[in-house]
Length: 264
Image (cartoon, one colour):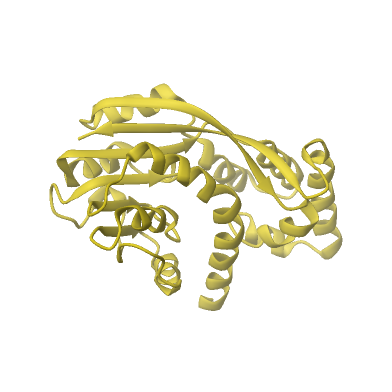
């Protein structure tokens, strides 16, 4: 079981982080204006994308904490080679009850995590609590599914339960910028600003990355249960649906994020 979970985390890091989360993470990082020596918290850090990007920015005099409720994912994050910059402390906890002191961070990030919280207002109040008086927050959420997301959903629909299809909608469940603005306002943040930005993501060719990509995430068990012919049909459906985004080197997939910043 542990070996299987590690394999899924390795796939997540090599595909989801590489082609999806890191490009948008850099955009979110730009809005935070981190300075050397600052203290940074990455909430719902998963394998540590934002934590590692922030560590480079704040340098060796800074401090970075990555927090996530999943012990196995944090174990994987710890096992990755340390990057340049600040050391990273990894903490296992939910966002709704942070085991961290008041006013202990200069910046807090939550990159594609808020939409998964059981209690979004409580999580944001906790992030506000741990920020220093002059601190700031940066939050990223998808505005909606990409063309690749839609192609995957359509291909998987004949096999997936209603519950699984609902889980596949969770990543884009906080796409309304006005709702994101309201949540931050009500949590006590000041100078809230939410902007929608577009970015074209580059992927390898469908047949090169999708068979591996399907072995992680909420659909992994379902895909593993399919016979070889069904998996091949699924991949071919996605390939055909994405032909208009393909070139000789891979896919160009338009995507859009809500990027929110605010002060404590």
